[in-house]
Image (cartoon, rainbow, N blue to C red; front, top):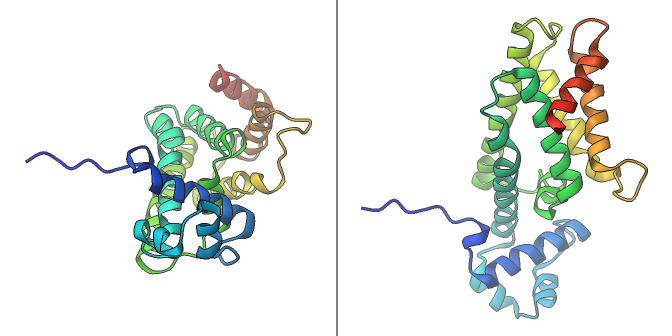
Length: 217
């Protein structure tokens, strides 16, 4: 029996994809609580019944948007860095990939994940949180390996992981693409700041700049 392939946004029917994309925009603009299914139907030019033909509920819609946002993050960031053997190189590549996803690509689905993280309930929330925990475990493992290699101070890997996530995930609230820093420059500076607090010795700046340059190249 052939294995049933999990569908992604690319595989979805055109109308359902349009509903998800429009809903992500509305949730970004008005918030999950502030955007009604009536707003969505008006934006799509459909009746509410027409929307509910494709989507079971508003919460199911939010879950679908977040699930796709996680798929995007996992395919564009996590997949590319998980196989990097050197923990310092892996950390630098992860920071850069995560920053550039948030700033350069600016996917509305990822913004919804960051801004509406408490809106999901029950099994939907647990499914999204399980995928988030996978990333946290990956970061903790990377920090532990960096400490074990002797390159990093004996920091708390859990605290370091959440600090890194907080630093990057808040960028969407204040960063402006037309400002004085490009996405690449911002990523480089965040790598430098993070590694200053992690690496040993007085040559942190040189190490972090070197690692950032390698990742950028």
